[in-house]
Structure formats: structure tokens, C-alpha cells
Length: 245
Image (cartoon, rainbow, N blue to C red; front, side, top):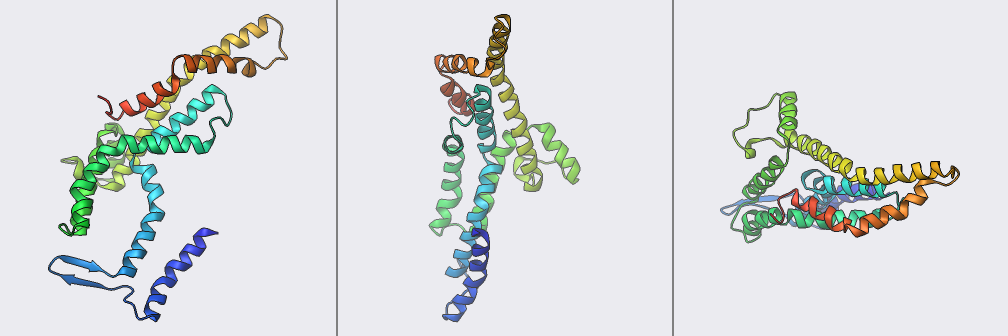
């Protein structure tokens, strides 16, 4: 319901601006670079806001973090506890924590000078893309990058900033998914051992009608609390991106 309304608004925005005598889709060339009209800036901003969730999912640490937290919840067997909103919030703020050095560098070298008018928007975009590419290449498996480069017929690449986004994005996502499932496998093992032990004890006692999941849940929660599981999980995820090292 929201997307059709937004699409209609984006279509009618330039028409309404023209009807009111405002420059809707105009740009002027000057010595300081290209300046866009206010209506076009608003249009570009609203378009960027619709793409922002995809950028957050595909170009940051969010994918690995949210998958590991979801697998951890399944390993605990707590159904919908913590709820999805809590997991998404934790993954989002942990992503901001992990990406803070990258975001700070982008602001200092690209966004800040562009807002001050000391840097053209195109050059600011190029500087920001170089920084985010360096982060993505650093955390992308070479095998995944080579696979997508061969499929696209690109490469070899001299440096990280020469890797095109259409090759780097799927390679980065594939690498993050692989790493997330490896971490999830390691998280599952201790809880799987508890499930097997509880199920064996119940079978030996002849209590076949008792659900092993319900009996094992308190022991899994006790183990998770005793080892400070949340701190270990979150700390390990952050350390995987070079935080705290």
C-alpha cells in the first residue's frame, strides 16, 4: 500500500513543482561544480531512502550478525524469544558499532567536505565507494571473489578500488553467508550435546511421553547464562571484523 502511494508522489512531485512555478528538474553548471534544484534533491533523497535497507543488508556486517543471532535463537530452542524486533535491533546497533570506523572515515573524507562545498558530489561519491570497497574486499573470501569475477568476465584487479560493485556485492554476500553458517554450526554443537544427553536419559527412564526439548531448555538456558553467552557471541562477531584487536 505504501509503495504505490510513494510512486505516485514521486511522479507528481515534479508536476506540482512546475505548476507552482518552481524549478523541478533543473541543474546549473558553475565554477564550484553542478548544483541541483531543491525539488530534484528531495526526489534523489527519497529514492536513496528506499535503497538504504538494501545497502545496509548488502554492504555492511548486518547479514552475518543477524543470521548468527537467528541461528543462536534456534539452537537455544526458545521459539520466538528474543522476538524478531529485539534481534533486528541488536543486529542493527552492533552493525553500527562494527562499521563505525568505516562510517567515520567516509564522513571525514567524503561527506563532510561535500556538505561544506569543498568537494564536488561526484568526487565525494568516488571517495566513499573506495572506502566501502576496501572494507568489503577485506572481508570477502578470495575464492568467492574469483568465482564471480570469472562469471562476469572481469579481472584481474590491481587493487580493491578497481573491483566493480556488480562483482563485489554478490561475492561479499556469499562470503558473509558462508561465515555466518560456520559460526552457527559451532554455536549449535554444545546445545545439540545437551539435547542428545537429555533424550538418552529420558529414554533410559522410560519417559518417552516427555518432550526432550522442554526438559533440555532449562539446562541450555543455564549453560548459556553461566558462560555469559550473549557477551561471548556479540564479542566474537565484533572481533571477526577487527574490533577490539
